[in-house]
Image 1 (cartoon, rainbow, N blue to C red):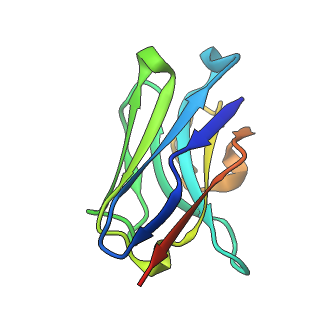
Image 2 (cartoon, rainbow, N blue to C red; image 1 turned 90 degrees about the horizontal axis):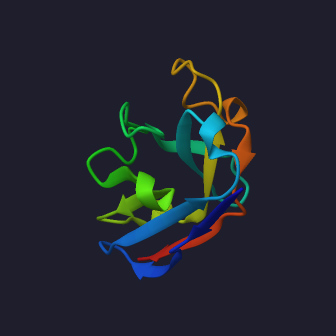
Length: 124
């Protein structure tokens, strides 16, 4: 399973780093993703990476501000979030997918395992 941490309250322009540590049968996982969901809105894609570290992709809304990375020795994926905006406020969820195709990396239904989420609140 997946355990996220690192969320919190930050002022606009600030930074946070989210962590997602994996436990269990991770040998079957091919890709990892971060999604977010604000109250009253649908869950949306934020960033994705292959478990081996390649193929990083970002939503247009976070490109240039967020960076996804992973530490295979720690079974952990990170989301470094800089220049945060109030519109980044949401619950952030880590997910893992087993599919060997990267075509639908941005679709939440492509992912097989999900963490419990961590809240990020950006004040103006």
